[in-house]
Image (cartoon, rainbow, N blue to C red; front, side, top):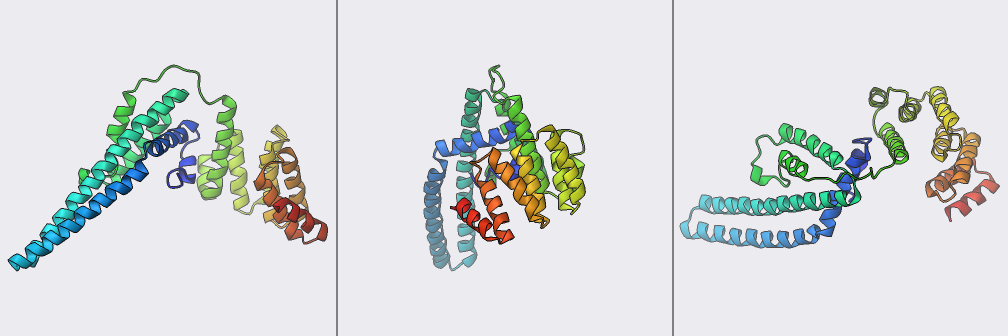
Length: 289
């Protein structure tokens, strides 16, 4: 999963259907044992390439024509590549079908997966316009979109509650603000929603504008004073600004509300260690243990 479920995907859309669609697709690869079967295919292809190499060398020696040998070897490698990519396209089509089945069973619409595929299709037109279609590892995204659209989805209640959607938007906003430039964040998050304020607060902090960052974060805390993630973020702002006393206070508040959050334990321990006082060091050791 590490190659496919990454920050870029998480911040791709603030609608959870996009992430769920890709998770369903990659889960299908695992369920269908495509990774293990790919190893078998690679062994078969390697044997084919060895045989082609031996044939090419033999033909070159018998004909005393090195160009003939090179042509046979190159042609053989091209054919073996086509075999590999053909298997890969079949696997992708199977994963699409099974992934859509999983989404149906859960009552999640395929709109997010379609959004991702349309984005990939746009990149295909830019980067793979002149490439041999038989040397593509995935079917053409336009074809995949068409096949997924042909599925009928039952009219079930929305799998994701309104509360979940809001939490997801907040998580995406935070991830986006920390992994994109402040200019990009200000361009994307310019409204008055909680997610927009959250993202802009982080962007101001990354511009070293602590007063404006805290001003926006205090707006969020005014809306939800016991939100542990707002308190933890305020602790982070103070910690990275060298204000350890305030940082420790807010990390402590966050951990008191969410006592099983290991990330809060680690951050509070780091602040304790930075303070370098004996009681704090002892508490840091306890937290880390």
